[in-house]
Length: 160
Figure: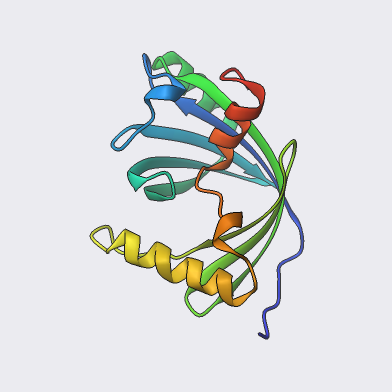
């Protein structure tokens, strides 16, 4: 296919939930906040699920002081939800980003995503992505419909 993957990136994510929100309450409209360290850079991300766990509005910005931001989040009443450590290689192909992930405690995954406008038909786009995976020989039975945070919570409990 002519794809060239990036060198391996190590990502260390810490996700936070707003005051009073438990993991079982994460649904459409609930904010999940993430501080990601990737090499020498750090990023703050807000994710809000839309129609399902694989469809979310995402806003992200680079930050200079992840420890200070974590203190701010805690001061605002947010609490640590999950820690996710992974090794990732990525590439782009026909408007999609393809990630090969090794997630600590979970194993290996292929993640394919496509950035779209907020009012796009998310179910149609998810179908397009799964058809692409099928073209690679990956069956729908192998589909994982939860994010890494949910998978870690399910494996290790809600205080992962």
